[in-house]
Image (cartoon, rainbow, N blue to C red; front, side):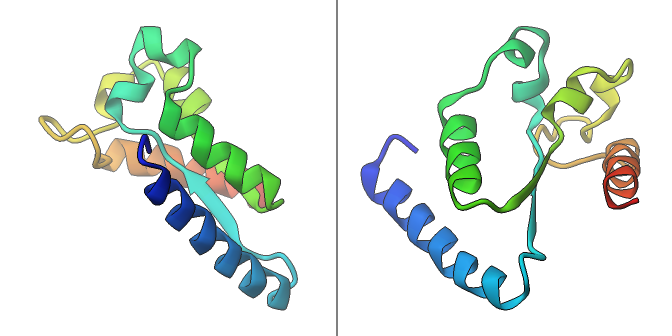
Length: 107
């Protein structure tokens, strides 16, 4: 996200999705799921550049957004959220945390 061209591509893609979202009566919801590094103790208190850009662009376009960072940071078993030796893919436990949050959000 340090490359302006990548940011413009991201914004253009969101603009195209925004058109479709209007056709669908604003039913698209983005799930913002962090990777392991973003939910380490010191990183729970701040947002990295990618998080800021993604979240800002989603909010500007008024998409529905469910962010999981706070919930992941608050998990007692946060080390179990991701697969061992794989910091970007959720474990079965991590998938259950996500499912529980989505259930709460849609009810």
